[in-house]
Picture 1 (cartoon, rainbow, N blue to C red):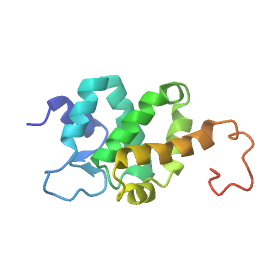
Picture 2: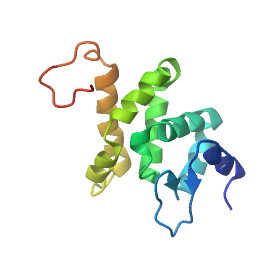
Picture 3: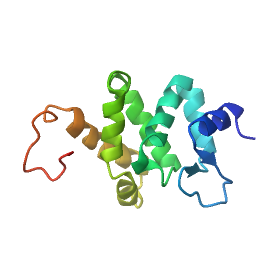
Picture 4: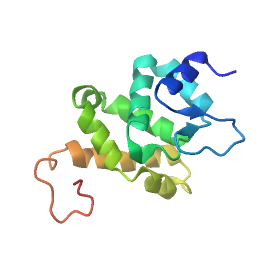
Length: 144
């Protein structure tokens, strides 16, 4: 039985929950237990920001697995000041990250969630860190 709060919030943000045996498509997930754990441990406000980050950025809609949910939750918790004070820039930075490619890179690793958090945190540091206003012109990770 799916927590009705999870179902309702996912529906609100256009994310469809599919059966655990189905392969999720665009804007679909089967990571119900993960979403329930995030909602119950971090609260509705936090869960909504995770949903916004994943639902409102086009680059992240393809593979909403448990590792991405947890990674996004970790990042929203760590960078809550950015999420709250610079929401549009946060979403732009998250959308600029090649999330699907990073998920693919992390896939064979023992701790996918934490690898994904690290790779995405680097992208956030580039977008919001000291080099955000004057980027390193020789960096291959410049955000345009």
